Image 1 (cartoon, rainbow, N blue to C red):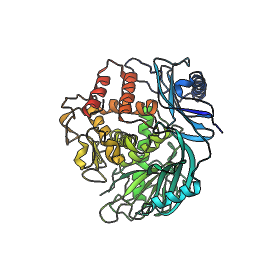
Image 2 (image 1 turned 180 degrees about the vertical axis):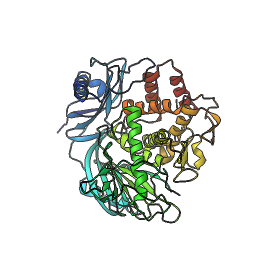
Image 3 (image 1 turned 90 degrees about the vertical axis):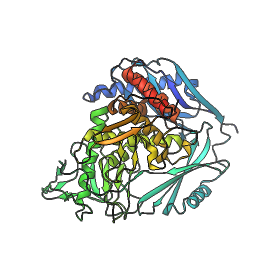
Image 4 (image 1 turned 45 degrees about the vertical axis):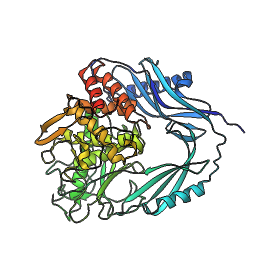
Length: 532
């Protein structure tokens, strides 16, 4: 029995709008009724554009569109991000963005790369039970006390749409932390397609509490006590009591409360469990404020919702991670010997930025897109540190230098860690995502500060270029603004380094103009890391 044609667009660049040199912030949230009306109209126009230009967007019978995000520029330009399903199945790699003018029409040139295939059957030849068993076997040694959940999907991330099983294995990692692995298997042949971590992690160790004496936003309870509930941003901070189960939920743990609204003692390896909570709570607020005040983003998902923050997760766990499943941030206690809690500014900003990436471009945590995912957290997490400008944790281009002295990763020459890539090559996509991220981190430093030797806030840097060129920086505020717009407007789940260059150039053109120094610096920095 034949099935409908499935046409998928892996990359869509429709209606690229060139503006002047004025930045384009999102529409003000101060008039929610007007904003909601404009948003609804933009979505309606976008759906009509996809239907009207079905060939361009690879849209065909059996498909349905699901709105994920809407960006509205000050000049009225609209960017509507869609994910899609085929006959009710999620299409991985089938996401795209519709770019349109204020009147709803597509603007500029329209290009698309569509892939068509007939699915012989929506019934897989390889069953879910066997797939789940295989995933559990492959996860052995990585995850303890594991349970698997298979889901039938359409896999289109590599340009050849086909039925596949996406099996998530959840359990406990080697440090007692919640850990998961995702295995994607061809549902016809049973062959493995790829696997990756279910969580977004950054490794670190610490030596002290990080933010010194700070103001803490709390909520007074009916009984007169105070709780770590941020009344402005909505996030709550809890003690996980070293919970080591993968079933962590936002309702898990115990809310931190205190009688006199004085929290922690600021000591290393403190026996006062609220000490780690102070840094976690305050740095979560700094991250929220950075996105809101810099980009007009109202929370991780741009919906005003605050996250749940857990400290004291696992036993001797030297790590931190963001989880979409519980919409929460989890931090460990370090190794119990030399490393304190993982709650410093750029670590918290890094992990919560994984939530922003998930809510926008959703860069796949594998290959070059995985490196871009990690780099996004490094770049914007570091910018949280620059935004906070804390005297104890001085802003720099050294990621996790407070919790992993002298640093875990650095931007001016990423290869100094012995593993990260300074320059793009065909082999970059085969590196662990924490090391393939080096190419984008290097781009960010060059775009921000330029090439050569330089001292910033007392730290000496010396950034080379891969092509022997000299690059002049535009400052990290402009470089990060270009990256954020590229992430939220132009990148999709399968964007690679070449696509990132295109996305950031489009963003630079939108923000500053095609003839601007910012556009030229964006291009020069990519060429300097061998991305052309």
